[in-house]
Amino acid sequence: MLLAPYGFEVVLPKDLGISFSPEETETTFTGNSFIKSKELYRLTGIPSFADDSGISVPALGGEPGVYSARFGGPGLSDKERANFLLKKLGTNKDRRAYYSCVVSYVDKNQEVSFEGRVDGLIAEDYDEEGKFGFGYDPIFIYPPFDKRFSQIPESEKNTVSHRKKAMELFLDWLQKQN
Image 1 (tube, one colour):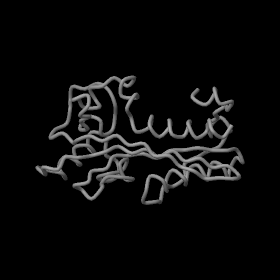
Image 2 (image 1 turned 135 degrees about the horizontal axis):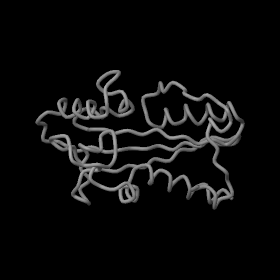
Image 3 (image 1 turned 30 degrees about the horizontal axis):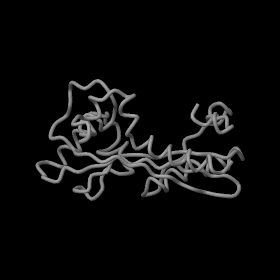
Image 4 (image 1 turned 90 degrees about the horizontal axis):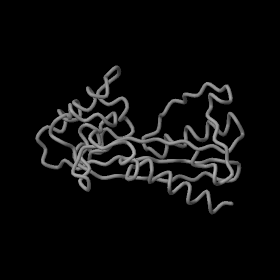
């Protein structure tokens, strides 16, 4: 586990017998991440971290943003949500997009957060061939690789992902706490 070198054991709520699904009511990734990490800390008294992530498209005013998992309405599949985004973006020439991930940490003395971001472009169609990734990966083009995230093996994608960047910042900070 990533935190083992720092002398920490990571336990999940289910490992502690805790049912955990707080409602994400904030309008930012940071806010939703803190809802989760603060609630975990409140329930356990154990230093806690959590994350929130999604995709944002500037031409759509930042949508879907924190609503990435429920964009387009309830009950849609990942593919239906991605196609909804494509339809909403239409022929707009501004295809910029970015994935964001915020990791927040809470203990008795502090509350801190760390954000990772990866920039790319929204394709004009849905990738039916790519076998990697999930969610919006079939429509997210990563220019440095000149491929969609759905065409990049997870091990390679994880070297540049928004989650990796946020976790690296968190781990760097955590290492300095010891």
